[in-house]
Length: 391
Image (cartoon, rainbow, N blue to C red):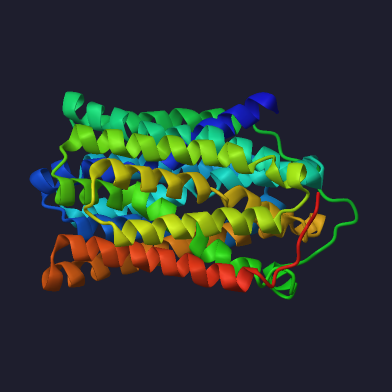
């Protein structure tokens, strides 16, 4: 199982890469096949939306079929096939369809790991294990920054995507031969997602889950590139370096959150405090758009560092799940997290375009970042009513 978890880690590196690599390809895709930032925002939103929609059937599959076949099959067909389609793209529509397929392929990977953690490890260890998996997987976020920009310049973006398709196939094969499914739950208890939705302890957690991941995912995964090039006229290599800084901060934030619930004895207030700082950084970025490259990168790094509460929020919800609904539970939390990021990504493109047309690029990015900041603030207000879990 150690080798199986390693392969799941590698698969999650791919998942993190695929959700973030569009940020550094905006310029070359616009030149070669005519995509605009709004086209890429839509394609990125489609990735998140298909990823989110898949969570409910994946939750059923994890509980009934097991993580091995679920993760290996979808990564092979969706990840490998989607990357190959992207390499053949000749227009924005092909990019959107490819991102949808890749979203399907990446959708079971992290939840397969979380399912194994929920079934085979103590509840108090879940947040730390989840954060380690997310933190190691975040290396994909780093590779999707400056290294991806370098690969696109050196080999071309099409050759790079063909290489990613091959890597996806190899990793999927590794999952098929190495991951072991947990033993079935004793007693044959039955249940569904509806049983989880009836649990009032989860209701105040869902809104923050819905909005908390979106700013970090949207800015690092897409908008940091156009922002740096439109406002500060940075080239693809410089955009890659700025993305790398934010990616490193996100990885550091994931490891920072991991043990804090056990160190401080609370999950609720760790999540609340971190997301409050992320909210302040996002709104500050909205106020100070165009005030300097270094300041903007610093604020993006703060958003990445303190917005990385995803695994701890999942752990907060996990503390209320019954064992026989572990698969459906972690995927339900993921549905809110990824679904919120996808829907807000959809909204970000039209918002940016509308404000840019009337008031210019700086006003458009100011409105965009304010949109994300106030969304977190609304989620935090509701989260105040959640019940704490103290490991």
